[in-house]
Length: 413
Image (cartoon, rainbow, N blue to C red; front, side):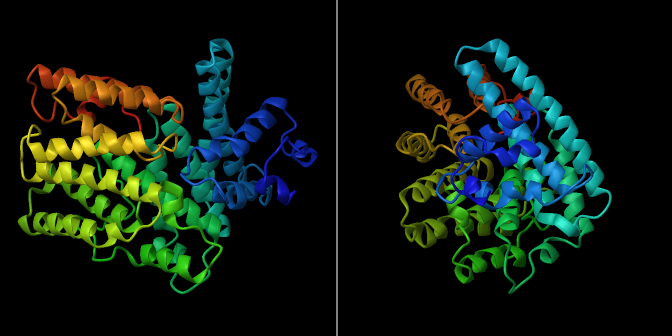
C-alpha cells in the first residue's frame, strides 16, 4: 500500500475499496500520479503524494477531515484531467469531467463546513490539506467561488487557538501538516493579490514583526532539526524569507486605501527589499529557487517603485526589472509554478509592442504546465494593455478591477 504513494503506478487493488466507482478511481489516480506533480517545483519526494494523500484512509465516515481530503483529491484530479482532455481536442469528455469536478467540489465544501463547525483538533493536518488542495483546484479551475473557503480556513485556525497552537515551538513537525500550512500561506498571499484584500496568514495587522510570526520561524527551524522534512523552497521555488517580505509588501499596498500611507513602514519595506538581494538572495545555491526568488524580487521592486514611490512605469529601472522577469520565466523550462504573478506584474508595465509580444509568447508557453487559470491571466494582461493604451487611470488598469469588471473574480497564481 505504502509503495503506491511513493511511486504511483497503475491503480492497485486496495484502492477499489475506497473508490468503487470507475470515474472516482480514475480521477484519484490521475491526481496522485500527475496533478500533484504540477503544484510543486521539485517533484522528487513530493510531500503531497507521500504524506498528505494517504491521510484520506485514516478517517472513516462522511463527516471527517479524511473524507473531505478524499473529495479534495478527486476535485483536483478531475479539474486537471478535464483541462488536458480539452487541450487534446476532446471537448465532450472535458465538459463531462469538469462537471464531475464541480460535483466533487460541492460535496467537498459541504464536508469541510461540517468538520469546521465541530472539532478540528483530531485531524488538523487532513483538514488543512483538504482546504489547501480545494483552493489549489479552485485556482486551476478559475473558479470564482473561492472566498468562502479562505474565510473557513482563517476561522478554523482562530477556533483551534491560532497557528502557534497548530505549529508549537520545539516539537516534531508533521510533514503533512507542514505541507498544508505552507501551501495555505502561499495561497493566502495569492488571494491577497487577486482580490486586493488582505487574506495573508502571515499578516499581523498592517505590519509583520521582524522575522515573521513565531510559528513561521518554527517551521523553518524544523527543517534543520528533522532531516526528512522538505524545505519550503522545494515546493514553491521561492525563498522562505522572501515570501515573508513579499507578504508584508502586499499587505501594506492593499491597506493604503483604508488606512493611509505610513512613511516609516514604506522606508522599512524599501530597505528590507534591497537588503534581501545583497544578503540572503546571494546565498541560495539551487538555480530554480534562485530564479523564482529573483522573479518575485523584481516584481516587488516594480511595486515599490510604481505604487509607493510613484515612479512612472515607463522609467528605465522599472522596464529593466520587467524585462528581467521575462528572461527568468523563459529560463525555467516547464516548471513555471508561482511565476504567474511576477509575469502579470511585469506585463502591467509594458507599453512597447515588442515587449508585449514577448510576454504573449511567454504566457503561451505557460499553458503546458497550467490549467484554466492561464486563460484568465492572458485575458487580464491583454485588458491591462488595452486600458493603458486608452489612457485609463491606474486603478482601472489594475488586475483587481479588471477581474471584477470582467466577471472573473478568480484566485490567480
